[in-house]
Image (tube, rainbow, N blue to C red; front, side):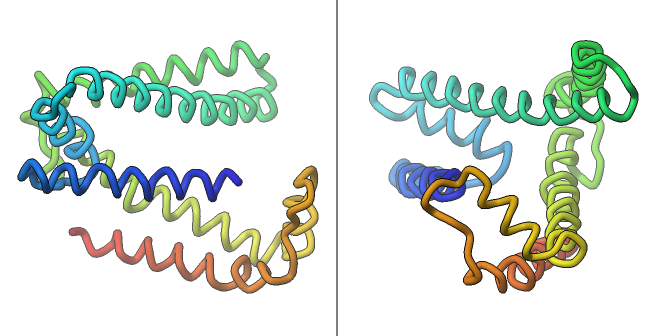
Length: 195
């Protein structure tokens, strides 16, 4: 359900955003430029754009916060389990490190915008590296682990825990063992092309 809803929302957003951009004659950029440059220009030209733009950015903030909380929970659990820290202390240390590491990224959109890496400011360079390499590499490692070490039976049993009437069945086996690892590897290879 989560995958279906996430994909449906992304698809509907594309059906709304891109025709609106073309209707107003705005070039559809990607990544941070689309969110923080192109979309504000679009909302500025729309009737009621201040209201829609504010709602869009507020919902974007909520999406970002919930994602950060999910990742922070995992990293806090790792600090708790691996380093023996209390949950509160582990989360506090991780959050503090994140805050300190985010300062240069934030400054790269202002006073440090002259610092360029591969022709991009620090924010753009990190977005490129994470989106083109780190996320696909992590996905490929996970896909290969599930397909080889963990195995189909363990994956199916774990996935079906608490799933209700809809179960992962043998029809998913070729996806888990071959199609998903291949697709993620192709995404990684696409990132290696350095657009």
